[in-house]
Length: 564
Image 1 (spheres, rainbow, N blue to C red):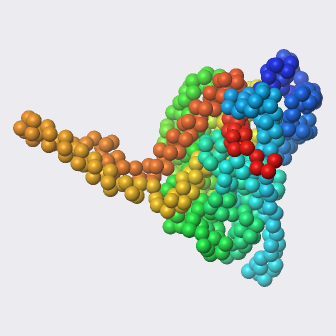
Image 2: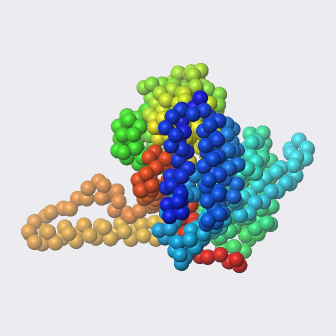
Image 3: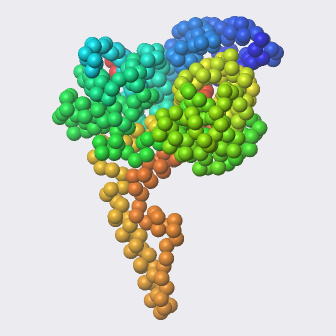
């Protein structure tokens, strides 16, 4: 028997006789999971029937999508569609502030039709090709590239290696990338690529063959290019794979393209990469989380003190994201008390040193045996803490274990770490969930900076660095000369340490850090405004989807549709 019934979403204008919270099941009593689902479907039926008044292009199969999203083990596409449907009515309200096409009914018809255009992926490519293993065996490799939305081009998304990758997962991640880019005002559409392999089972030479062949195959179909579709690193891939992609494209279809290296981000600095790309995901997660932790209203609801200092953190997954996230939190005064890895879990109530653990992991290939914490058989997902950060795999928090979660705040470092049912139950428990669609903004934003650098063919700060240093020195000398001539005495002007460190102007590192901070601060403020305006409470995910969808709808509606 579940004691949670909230599904809430902003509704349709009351002018048509439909309540402003039409999907919110205000039953006011405990209900079973079956009754919960039944009422959701009932509300979906009412909304579908209402579509006969004004077209509702995004909700053609709302009943089945709601049922699939709230199932015990939903597919990733079911999860994304559920959140899309939940946010769509609120998006309509938001878009009506900006999109006007004659009458109210015409405007609403355009918005709903555009939401229907956004929902599916625009272009999907599946390819299979053979490679010869070093053993002499011939193996067939299968991969996908999905482009979700072309409201902005190029599309942008990483390349994932996983035995569990499939078309459903690739499409879902492409949609999330679209929403993240729109949310932070980065002019990319969303995309994602996946190759169904376990990279640990292949030699470096075999991986190079796979990556280069995959690059050629998608290039032949027009699924890569600086102004068309830009790849990046993801789970299982990294800097080296991105270098291979850039080199392959530059020496094949991009041989006459001056901007060829902009076809992929996440490259090494020698290949046109940018400072801080390797830690951008962790920095973005930390900045986003810290801004929500500073929000007094949210912290009051979850009964926590505002601020990062003194918070206890548990991290699932100690890869690149988990390590850098832990490092930033420790630097801000929080304590990482638990680390969950696939072979071992570590716990230390006094705090774990992320740098020491990273050194141990690099030396041994495992967190097991680390002297700075105690190995434990407990499921640390269920241990009390202020902030729980799942950074490993999707769907780790479900309706089966959400009641065991004792964290006050959950930060989705990985995509879709919670099922929709678990998410709704968490909201009812007053757990603040900071969703993947905004948490992953750090890597997307920094990728955009790298793409800009490659398109401009000059690193940030290179043209102004020396000039600004000399200008500031002349300014200090001028002030000193004026004072000395006025008072007829020596009066040396000594810059403060802060001013002296910035006298030379902004370096590439400074540009990236300040640009990332500015972008995330503005996005979080906009999301908080949506939460407040639409009275969403702790439902940050719905606010993120509403804001992202409204920006995409506005882009389509403003530009119009070609050949329609």
